[in-house]
Length: 363
Image (cartoon, rainbow, N blue to C red; front, side):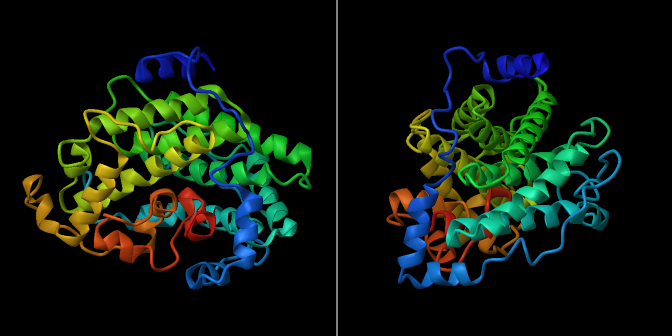
């Protein structure tokens, strides 16, 4: 625990005292009862389509926790761009299946009120908690394992933050899962070092910390997320771009969007705790500037030429716009680039930020 406190002090420039606090452990990213009532009575074709397209924890096979020490091959065959390593995808299949199953159960609970689905999601997480999954790794041995932890803990953290609202769930199981996630989130950020380059991975670890911190009432984790968010906004250049993501060659636009996913959801968690990060400004720029730049770059890839001469990958799916469902629920689509408006005209799903964001937030 002491090492985490040191990381928080060095990386964020502060300790726990005087920082942001979790005011409501059951706030999550949405008001579950209110959202369920909306889903039940809606005539909106998008919401109805999203509800029909939901997966089911009960219909998916249980995902056994991985055995042994986490070691995952690098995502890219060489460096931080270029051809993708097929061995990495094979090694991470189990984590993707876990994320898919738990978020499916949570999404069904939100949309339909099924306590069988919420119990299924919690049981799946409890199996991994009992096995001590996501805890046995080292960043120096396998940096990709470290990255995988931040993503899977984010998915589980968002899921757990919703499940804590279901009073019918087994209390001992819920306690065990939440404590496991606290340990996983704390270890995840404890691996950070003062000289690390803050980029999208730092933001994803912050989402893991924020989501788990809210569900657990852990002020240290929640504060880590808030301060990391502020650091991220401070990184934006005059165009609203993240310079470190613009250095990712042919993937620059994609990484701008990838960095935004955890940040938007952190802002949503914070808003539910009475902390306005959506409006937070650093150097005259806010989250909206980063969102607008991403959308404009999708619409016009030449905007990225000032950062890299590499031709940008131009394929974007529903997951690339999933986080914006939360933003648009607050602020609407006025003034947003056409690509974002269009991207939200179909159900959006990304397990790392909670599964169906249309169900969780979409208007």
